[in-house]
Image (cartoon, rainbow, N blue to C red; front, side):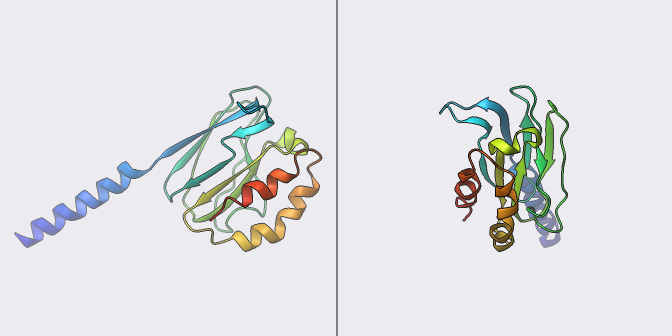
Length: 149
């Protein structure tokens, strides 16, 4: 009887972990409700391992691409095509910084924190390279990174 109970508890825990995974929708927009231009909406997400993020081409001529060197070292990078809906699975703990490639000069970036911010020191130390590519809205880099806890 105990063996059956242990198997039942294991199955409940296993099924609960599958049900608990969440999907976050991030819109790629020319302007958000507050009037900020060329943004991911929302620009910051705090997620758990196993969650997914779906980037939605709400407005045309946008993509989502992870920024090289600004994601956890063992995480998979991504590079969505223009106007493409893309879903990424977050399997590695840490901080991910991503961009809209054609609008990086306008500061179209976003940040995802998955679990603990295990690579935050690397992100902070390496973010100046990202900031150097941005002409307008440069403050977004530090604003979004500062939301990591």
